[in-house]
Length: 548
Ligand code: HEM
Image (cartoon, protein in one colour):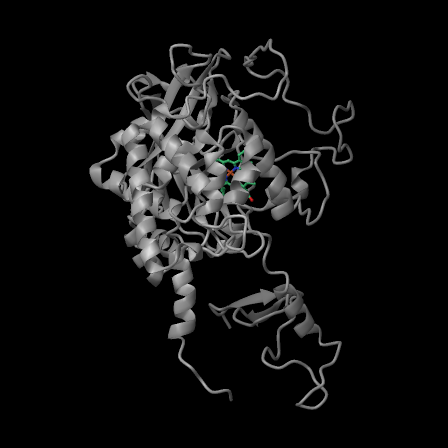
């Protein structure tokens, strides 16, 4: 008898492939009923199949990401142009992932929102994560960026506070815009990012229709060990689409996972999303001619001075086979660079670089790099060993597996020897904890405000006014002052907008009932008027029912 399509041989015996088994490989005889004394119970303790099943279920979820918990992703490839603009890319970097026009490197991309939990709405006003892992011939390269090209803060020390402020109240777990603006009003470097975030750019329509950016500044190093500063940008071939708050509300009412669904379905139907990668290049240095610090991640590098040079394209053409193993357990980090790349002195980037692998050892586990989605496609030969769930391939061991240390004269792995012409920045400065000397917190915020289209500016003013109207007056005043410093018109319009919104709210209800107006007192954590209305609606519109 021939081997049936759904059958396989086990120990010489034909087994039906559709037979449900336990993790120990035993066929499951009954998957509907637990083992009991008589058909009404009680249950017995040696109920092995049930206990194994339920205790595995009890452990199904790993900790969600502390930020960027809600996300989705896909696989594909990066194809290099072999050039940076018109020049051979090798003039700037020896990273092989960029050399040789037409060469393809497999990639995984994961897109995400930042503040919300794992299944939170994908219509949130929030930056979108844009993380790409390239499985290059020299090992993995991760570019962990966002859709927006700048960031809220420029010092890693501030990141945990920023995220606490952006998430819900720790007591009630209810969100309130006052928390964000309280933090932001004391952190004026964030005004530029806030200007983008509260405009339609703060709600990309889908993951396919958004840009990406490395945000932080990296270095490219060439064969001579010479380095330049570099910023990365991804431009969607599908075009850019953003949502107004009203559009987003309507979409959210029907679907809280529309962006995940859109990405999955586009790839499923063969409509593969594609992004072109550009770099901006700058000589490393202080650049006194600029009115901002080039390493400050709250700033854009002006395109007229630092043109965008196309270097390649990314196509996503394969959906994950399993969301948990391919996407949830995927671990990206800013420290994951290949030869030909280096860190710039951007202190935010350096602060990030510790954080990612640290959290992944906690979130996914010590051996997270052994998981197929995180492992490089190149050989791994390491003396790092053991830890929970170590399942190294013994073939990774050297010719003498007894030597699990280095250096040794008896065998084991050998270090690679001299780095190719190394890049050796030199420093001569005092150690200190100090802010940068060219913060220029308002210049580009004003330029960005003025560069928006009319409808984008209107939307920005409305969104800011609605959010600030429910904040403490001291926060309102501070924010208006910041916006005024960015552009007089900007400040004036937000001030008027807040006034107008507060008038509407007062007509709706007495001022003291507006959540947030009595900060420090009982109103903390009560949400916005619209949120409160929804709470009341739930009670009032709920249909009464009799107990049964
Ligand atoms: C000091 C500042 C920052 C710190 C400490 C930090 C830390 C973190 C941490 C702990 C995670 C969770 C990672 C995981 O569990 O796998 C994360 C995720 C992420 N961060 Fe940051 N972050 C910072 C700034 C930024 C900036 C400026 C960007 C944008 C350029 C960014 C983009 C992302 C993205 C895209 C993810 C999700 C990666 C994924 O899809 O798994 N972060 N960050």
